Image (cartoon, rainbow, N blue to C red):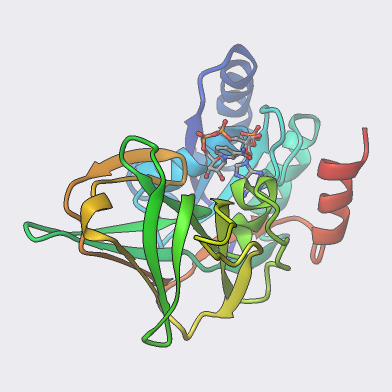
Length: 267
Ligand code: NAP
């Protein structure tokens, strides 16, 4: 792989992260690495998954760079490096001894009578009624209304996001090399009056998803990778996969199963 020469550090500013950031700055020259805020080969998030998500957003999902995380957070599912392995990590990236993993993002379009907004997301978007009342949403796939959903809301996850909020809502974990979109209901109503699909639905990325709120419930609270946005009079939300993936540094190949076991099952 390409030898990394320049890096940019994105820390979440906890005490532990700041100490590690300081240590990294001290070590960079030893491995011929330079900190560059503009033209960096590698963005390094110091913190947990939250820090990783904020790095991606702050750097506008930079397709020219690679990304990696050092876990000083609580879970750190997306974080590849442990703080104790920082020196060997720096050595390996400086000589190009690493793997590269391509990760697809969600591409989100929000249409109102007044605006069209675009976002990208690593994990997911959740669509809820603005005041967190019951949402009424048409879910459209293949140009057909699959259901008019009634409940807390709908979550659309990427494959990589499937281990995040999606998992807590009872959604399935998707192996990251499978390119898919997962739609997971959030507290769906289920009665004689309201019939909803109660489980998540996994569809191929060729099928874009449209969510249309019912007119009287069209003021929405959208959460995109944990950032909240309120929109009035939403006409529709379109979710598909971004054309260009981002690239992550991995030190080992195919570690997903081990990561699931270590992060979700072992003490
Ligand atoms: P946050 O505190 O930054 O994250 C909540 C938890 O989700 C943290 O434990 C975080 O790990 C973990 N997480 C984030 N992305 C993950 C991924 N791809 N795989 C596995 N775990 C992941 O919360 P936030 O700022 O509100 O939102 C950031 C993300 O957190 C959202 O995109 C959403 O997926 C997730 N979230 C989860 C829940 C839930 O499970 N009930 C609720 C809200 C948000 P770290 O501890 O390492 O940061």
